Length: 144
Image (cartoon, rainbow, N blue to C red; front, side, top):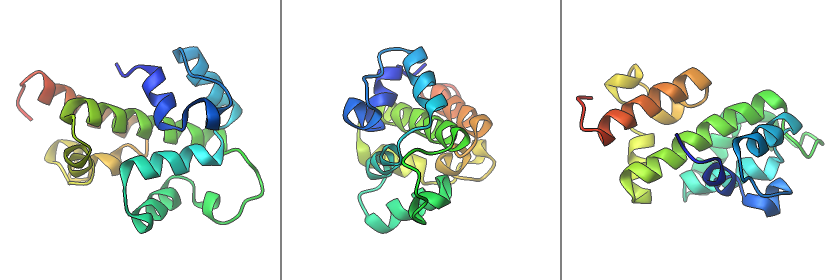
């Protein structure tokens, strides 16, 4: 299981979220309130160094975030998707210990993720669980 503090950090930490994430309850409360739009931008920057790729990811995760929706916070559904993706991104970083290798895993289609990239899978909670299962098998030396 990925530590909630690490998920909070990848989403911008206390400066963006308004308070530190010290527990699963803190993370759940932030999601229920709706994550600030800036959390999505922080996550996109962590995944991709290129601004065009960042924008594409943001459009996938919360299309209205780039369309100037006047709200400061994302919806609960958008926040849940972002949290799932953040969990997968954090886990990839832990598994590969190298941002480039983690990015390569996240953006390369994999047979165990139904031919989609783990990043695409992580757009839903069930897909995020699938991507995490692949990484767990890699960590434990099981066939993938």
